[in-house]
Amino acid sequence: LNADLAIRFGYNYGASPIPESAVGVNVLAPATTESHYTVGFSKNVGARGVIHGNYAYVANNEQKQAGAGLPAIKMDQNYFGLGYEMKF
Image (cartoon, one colour):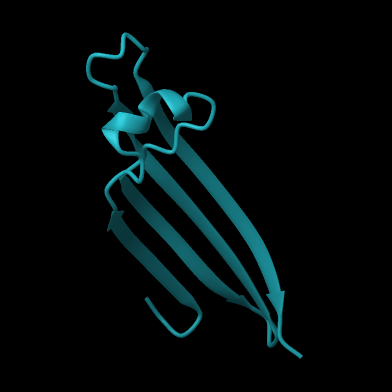
């Protein structure tokens, strides 16, 4: 936006790494997410400092193993980050 403030937006898509034949094995760690939306900023503070902030929403995705009689696995996520950088 200006010399002291940057705003960033992003989108990422990656197919789930879990094949349908292995859904039952991943019930305890359902890494099924595929779409990620992000927004972030950096703001200069004084001569040497920068504050960084970000938010990511990972959209819900559900997978089910065909014919296995197992429950579907699904996951969504929200992530917030805040940091301070000091330049030396």
